[in-house]
Image (cartoon, rainbow, N blue to C red; front, top):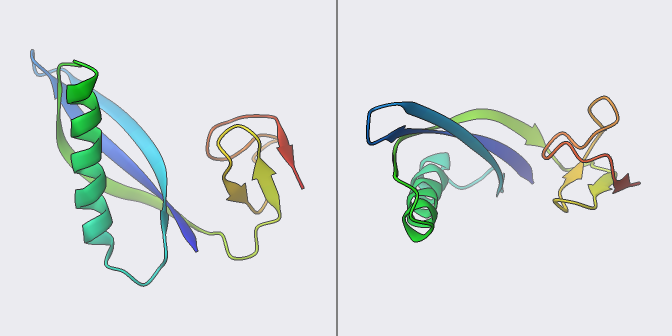
Length: 99
């Protein structure tokens, strides 16, 4: 199992850029293109649902992490990870996790 960090470039009505990101699961076998398209659609749907005036233009894969041998679990985002990042969850930054 892998974690994939997707970065979204959106623009506001006045063409101001807005960057956001999301970590998602990837099995390492399926084509990554399908996951990127799926999450782009989900992100745009969520923005539309929340009446946020942003249009998602691009999505790119910024980072992948192998989660096969992870031994920590974050109590906030419930993701598993190998080692804390300066004492914090590398996905959400929470300091509350268990081994």
